[in-house]
Every structure is written in structure tokens, then in C-alpha cells.
Image 1 (cartoon, rainbow, N blue to C red):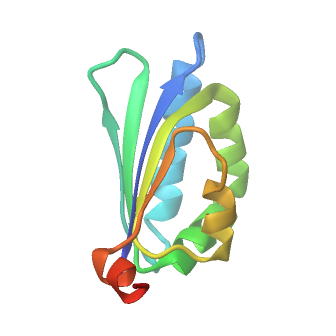
Image 2 (cartoon, one colour):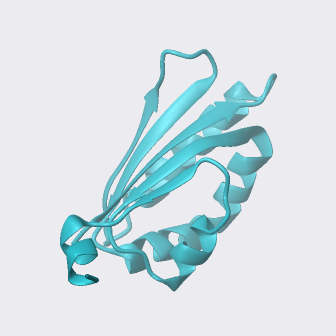
Length: 118
């Protein structure tokens, strides 16, 4: 089952051009990753807010993406704040640790997995 991630970011005041540069660099890097199925940025209706939809073959591919673009992610978080993140699918240990206790992050487990746990 694939893993879908939707995040919203708010570019910090005076940093929007740098945010856009980094967002474009992230999209270019993701385009060459074998486990990345979708990596698409959107402009929201709120000024300075952007959202992204990411889809990976599985949680391990999402983890590999994060390691591959680690330096770009650090640049992104230096110029923008994570407003929210929603993850849809099965998480691996790395993603469970990343989501644990993080403000504005929601994890959505597939219904079939939730029913199997009963």
C-alpha cells in the first residue's frame, strides 16, 4: 500500500523567495527517486502558505526520500514553518518517531489495518 503525505507550510516573513527556491529544488530531487510516485507543490488561498502532496510506494521510500534530501529539508525548515501534516498509510519506525508528539501532525491508518487489530 502506498503512503500519501499532505503538508502545509507557511513561509517566514521575508523568506518567500528562498522558500520557493528550496521547494523547486526538492521537487527536482524527488523526480529522480524510484520510490516517489508523486511530489507536487501547491499555492494555497492564504498568502505565504503552500501545500504539498507526496506519494511513495511505501513508508521506506518516504524515509529514503527524507534522507536523500536532508540538506534541502533543513534549508526549508530554516525559512518556513510546518503548519500541518497528514500521513495516510502504514508507517515504519522512522515515521512513527517523526510523527510522535509533533504539533499539527495527523496519522491516518488504513481501515483494513485497524480492523485487523481488533
